[in-house]
Length: 380
Image (cartoon, rainbow, N blue to C red; front, side, top):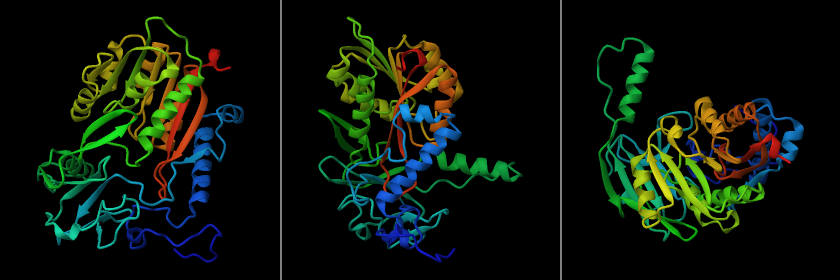
């Protein structure tokens, strides 16, 4: 509640929205290099306590406190996709730290230049949400999502029932209205182009898709995978629009790839993948939950998985381990769940060969981590 003696690493936040109570840049008061060190320390601690990795495991995987990599920014103007709320007066802003109030009239420092300029010129619906994206050419696109419907009055008599009703209301489909630009934004990774709905998922940091794709390929190349004349078979689980699938297909260092099976539950993401991969029969797209689809996939040489913040969990990890791939690359956006998943893989004999981490959400507590796992017998 009060700073009695400031750390030498404490700085004045550059984010105006955070200074006025928004939750966007929640670590903006820490000098960026020091914040990266702290986040690296937190990740290593989670890998040891939750992931059950020994000091030797961490050393072998290159996971020290300095493992957090910058994506080449100074903590500002890195975000190409964001969500804003609209207050009761129709003013857009960031959500308050730890609350649902809207902090209007104060800009976040994270969006790229021009992305949130001139919003006062538009008429927004009170209670709505705004999806804002900057495409590969720097053009802005804004789509308004209608306010969520209030939960129906009914039989939910206790607090849990009311909370579940509120969640169902928030998750229900909402009408969309294009405010500026187009409903779809184009993004490029390597030589491929993706057309992603403004309301759909794409990595927030402008450099993140390329950085993660390079990390996946580099880690697999260093794992000395067995080569097949017929080409490698890969799984890309929770594959979204297929950025990792494309990286595997286009990587000269991995040798020929026969097929990459992309599993994703979001129909719009798979539609974007189908458009990007049009004319290439090596990507095979599967719509559905990973647990329901994975049992019908052909035996893989490698598996890449990028689960949501809830992690992959025992059922998916059991299925992957049963398929006996030569290497697994796990991409995680929640420190605790990432460490838990690595502990589950270890129960099946898969140990980390290399771990990398990215400060892909500078000035925030969020971390993106990537681990390449191989069977214990191949670890050396």
